[in-house]
Image (cartoon, rainbow, N blue to C red):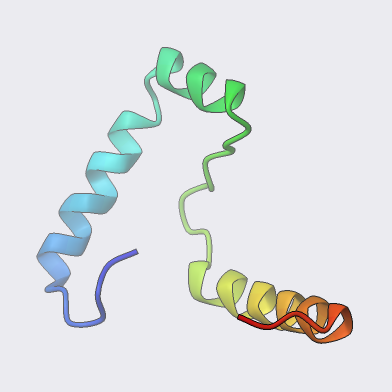
Length: 67
C-alpha cells in the first residue's frame, strides 16, 4: 500500500522489490511461521480491502463495539 499520490515509477519499483523478495525461500518460510501468506502478483488489494471493510463493519455493529 502506498499513498494515492505516489508516482507510478515508485509504485512499480516497490512492486518489483516485493516480488523479488518473495522468491527468497527463507523469507517465504519465515513469513509462514508467523501466519503471513504473500498475495499473488495481480492481487486486487482495493477490492479485498473493500470486502474486508464491509465484513468487519458488520461484525463491529453486531458486537456493538465502539472506540
